Image (cartoon, rainbow, N blue to C red; front, top):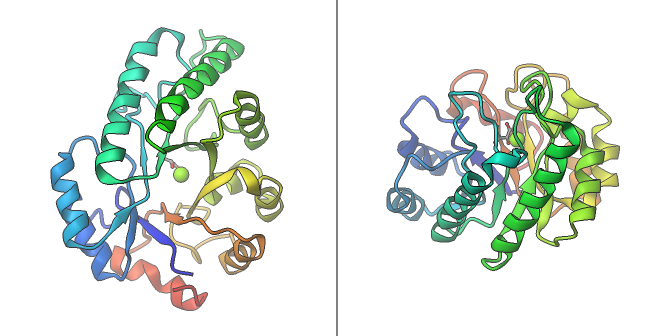
Length: 260
Ligand SMILES: O=C(O)[C@H](O)C(=O)CO
Ligand SMILES: [Mg+2]
């Protein structure tokens, strides 16, 4: 199993962003993913990917103003124009960098926004974005995020996520199944993965607590990796973890669990 993609937003943070690609290569990876590439010119990222023979599998849409507390803007009825611009920007980066998956963060539900209204807006925005992305053969991902790390984040329930995907009815909207979030939200990791397998296009991993590398916490990743194989999962596995020590030394679990 060599489908691991280093998340260069959470790993190799010892060095500046653009130097992390070379580090990924030096550690034997051919795939990376990234949360928000938008501060960096496309050409510079493309050069790094090319020089280090890497492919990038995932980026997020611009999430609004992160410093001011935005964690996505898709649920807001009064931010449609800004959301559309974020979709255009995401598509621009994805097409230029050959990225197949774009994760759209929903947003944090404010006290003065009715949940039903937010849900309708979110679904309409997802539909519009997915339609636009389909023209570029891109897949839009949504991901339940745990309420401990992101209180009041709109999407914290996988059953609701799948029912919305079904209702929207766009074939290029899929799930990003992040084992770290799923463990904190509800547990029952393997069974839930199997139940929703057909909707899952991308997986991310980290252990609980601490969001560190596999083997540092309560999730039995040796079993999870076998389970992914058993279910026939052929997608990539994003290493969206915060190394417990030095990044270079955080990959020992690959030898431990014999997954290279
Ligand atoms: O936090 C996560 O798990 C998401 O995947 C992300 O990229 C935004 O924080
Ligand atoms: Mg994630």
